[in-house]
Length: 241
Ligand SMILES: [Zn+2]
Image 1 (cartoon, rainbow, N blue to C red):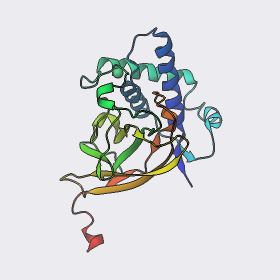
Image 2 (cartoon, rainbow, N blue to C red):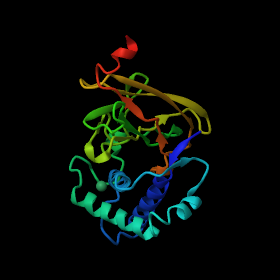
Image 3 (cartoon, rainbow, N blue to C red):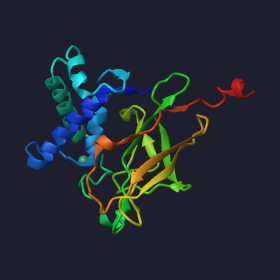
Image 4 (cartoon, protein in one colour):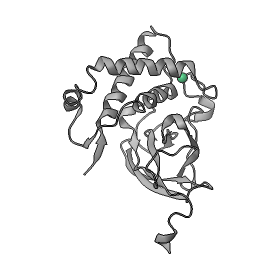
């Protein structure tokens, strides 16, 4: 059984639609880079009560179900617009915000490649089930830090207060030998801090290789990891004896 936050689908779709529209027409003049997109998504999700449901019920049901909570989708659009204003006013200076892959850093492979999805997840405190902040999450592949697609993405990722325990990675594509091949990639997430027990979380992503790099970010194919649960050091002694 998969439990899923349905509101998230609606938020991601609404943010994507508004950003895609802005990218095409540029009427409002806000930054449409992927980091700002993610920041706005986080802003909105952190201000709505999650609505969990068993997966299998889609977006169509959601609109009907949440008519009470969000009187119209216009309410959500208003919240997204507030998010855009806030994110624009506090744009992170360390990011390029140019929406372009920096060629020198990305080193995209020529020819067929494995294009990784955005990998996202959340860090929770196992004692309180509150989101954790002030820790760094490292994404490893083949025992090394996985290179990110450009300098807008950080690995290790510093989990801060304003992302409510969430982290995001977008690994750089890897060279494939031919298109239409299927392969499974092993990843590890690791968190090492003074405060919490060290955590290692392993997962796999299956990909089909692509002929060339399409260059666009598909939020809808984001890969979500299980929640990472950290336990304060010393709290599990009674279990491990
Ligand atoms: Zn930006």
